[in-house]
Length: 319
Image (cartoon, rainbow, N blue to C red):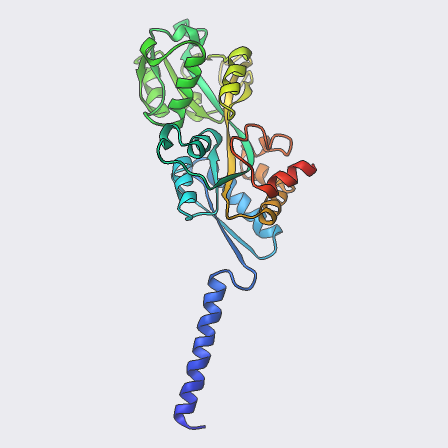
């Protein structure tokens, strides 16, 4: 074969190889790439997201799922909107705001999101020192209250719960502090109450309880019902006695839910396969993190705050 003919053959082979590589990189050969946005590596979303990726890879043919550390809910929703990720763990209240264009998403509505399932509760906790004598949320009138960082999901939760008791920020001395800052201020006596939204037991609350007897203020059933009627993302929760040191009573309150969402690019079949894989291998989530035991088929639509992916809905309707 002449030299120029050999060069042509080699060039053709190179182009074919490049085409095959590009096809493989774009999901050719039946591969389905799925990026899952989670949260910080020290949080709960990251290990749960990693376990979900493992479940999908082991149980859906051709799946190549990976979990990545992110700035959590608000960042995750923006990444979904921009098609930078395919699936994310988020708080159900924040995704409700995004889809409806309210709170921190006012004027920035995100329409392309669908729910797969709610996962586990992130509990609303008004924490006070027992020695303060504050027994219920109505007692916060005129008090210094750390309500969460300005514009955060926790701050919106605090504002909504206070409103159920007829209180606005005009009725309290509102301090816009993150819970870490609020917890320090509570220990130092610079605020009378601190609010957070997090799964219990919460490490920062445990830290306070190790040095001071604390009280979690209850959200009574009638107030919880009114909040749920107005905001569909809330669910009733009981923080059990013994959750924190010196904590000797069950306390009724409300929670938002961590949930799994996708974009509308995930079709019905993919949604069904993803949901089936996860919810028939829940033991892997239990092994990944203690909150895994709270993730159940029966609870997977509790607090569902947006329209569901058709395949996910189909799976739960069959159960």
